[in-house]
Amino acid sequence: MQPHQGNGPAPSPAGSRYADWAERLGAGLVDSGILLGTLVVLGTLTDFSDTLGGLAAMLWIGFAGYLAWLNGSKGQSPGKAVMGLRVVRDVDGTTLGGPVGLVRSAILWVLGGVTGGIFFVLAVLWPLRDRKNRGLHDLMTSSSVVAGYPRARFGKDIFRP
Image 1 (tube, one colour):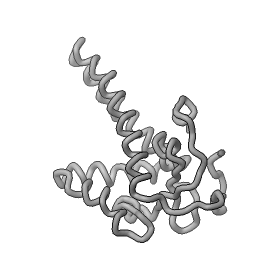
Image 2 (cartoon, helix red, strand yellow):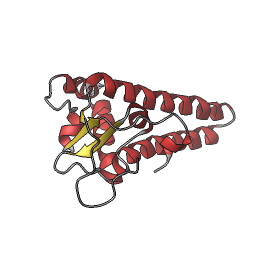
Image 3 (cartoon, helix red, strand yellow):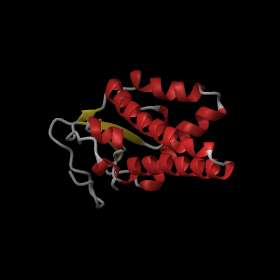
Image 4 (tube, rainbow, N blue to C red):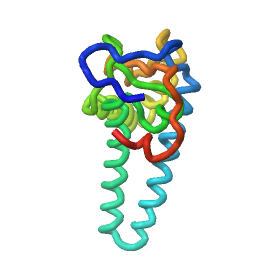
């Protein structure tokens, strides 16, 4: 399915609904696995020199930012694509846009880091009590995660903008 491009509401598949907590967790685990695998591969560069280690860190941060950008620009990180989920604006159902996708993820990770992980835990558990199953970072960016989209196969296409 092509991401929505335009000013009108994104076409929702028949039977779409707010993603439940387990679906969101599944998507997060897929994305975390991708980032962990990337970290392991790039981490081997630190064995060769400190300069390569610094470059590896910058590449990993850039890749993590790219996944956040995908959440905003096409509404799906690789994990969300595999789970058939999409991040949309609450007001009109369109994609957030790349910059808002970055902000949405930065809220989660920066505030999580500043609060010693407390904000992260609250944000991840918040969908269990919200009627639209939104996390705190969703509330702060006026977004929701919607289920019912076709599930993508794991492969290079889920990494394309």
